[in-house]
Length: 137
Image 1 (tube, rainbow, N blue to C red):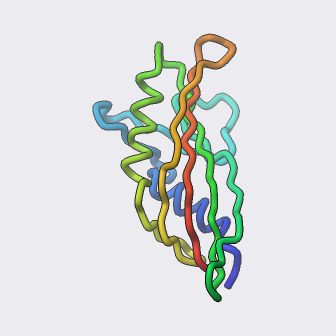
Image 2: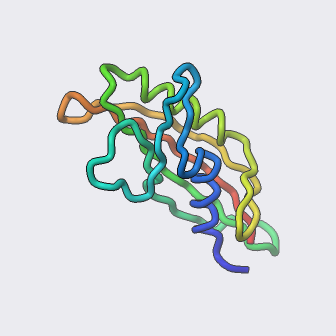
């Protein structure tokens, strides 16, 4: 079976709202776009699917990978509230889920870490969400 790396990427994108983006609880009508490559001039907030890497997790005789995927949340809201709300929604949508993939099977997706930081411009906040995903192919 083909490598499921791109399928993992697509499953996360779809789970987070696809082209329509995330809708954040408490902010009706606010859609947070999810990007692989952010188009120039895009307004914040948005989420980027930053990177992923895979390690062999073949415990028996099937092909299984343990993947780490990094998502970044970007916001210019005055304070961390917006970043924290977006990360909470990502957690709600992805933690302990088995997302549907076009190639391979997702055994489980878990949110392993969430972190916020202020960027050097002193106006932008970044949130980082680390996912641990087991896939079989």
